[in-house]
Image (cartoon, rainbow, N blue to C red; front, side, top):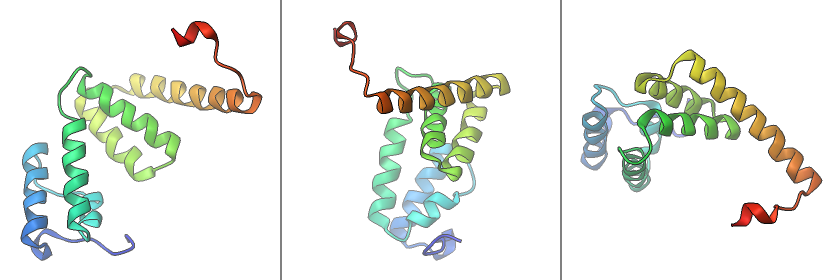
Length: 131
């Protein structure tokens, strides 16, 4: 259970219901996931977070599946099981195959390993990378 529990739709204030309605309309779904229901204890944080995610994840220069895969990669690195599950499902819905997921995990694992090696060895950035 979330620290403060979840704010279910029938128990939500009009301000929270408005955000819930926008989430459902934008995502073309009939339910609100636990992340949003947990944030609803602070309506300002709920609205701010939803508006930011809606803007960042909207169509743009990056394909929707790429955006979701980046979100999965960062979530794996940050070890957020909820975000891994949520954005893996969204990436699959956007077209990510099992093969793409496996390759993504290989890249994430390698990047994390080499990042730690660079940090440990305190490797200086090559001048050619700066231009």
